[in-house]
Image (cartoon, rainbow, N blue to C red; front, side, top):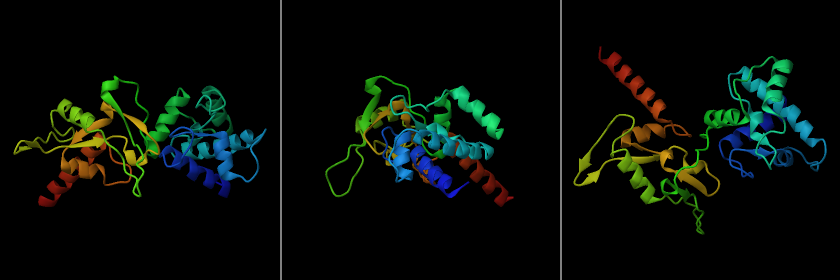
Length: 238
């Protein structure tokens, strides 16, 4: 890829991780991207230049088995790319011989978020099972505000049991269990709605394992890590 394409690719990965302040978390408009990469004023024809650049980037990603980052560049009014998914898919196939295994823009966007660091947005649920989090406080240190009632509701729903290893422990009337944000608030740049199903109970050990990388492991990945550790222990004792 060219130097410009490398720059754009880096920006889009930041967008997928929620690290860029844009009009919508996880997406960036054509104009927003243009302002970041060019000193020229936004205007007619600039969108076509962006499309050419991000199409080449996406062909590169698909060749490496990664989701197409072009799907994160959208028309602000619709939060979708400027062309139909079928046309984009056909263009990638005809120009670069790359197959994109998605049926819609949304599927491709969600795969970008999953791969690069942000889970797909949840469907709407009962308002009693969701809260707004991430309020910025007027202090020197910006901290995230968690909702204790929602966390307690998740713990009760999971029966105070780790959803990875089934750990359960009650000590002096206190359940030893953590509540883990599937979509960590540290990756959110603004107030966001947290749903009950975006929380999961983990024991202290599994919670530590989840945070052994910058974007936390999910339940299946933690289970895999524990299996790997158990296998290594068995091999070491033989």
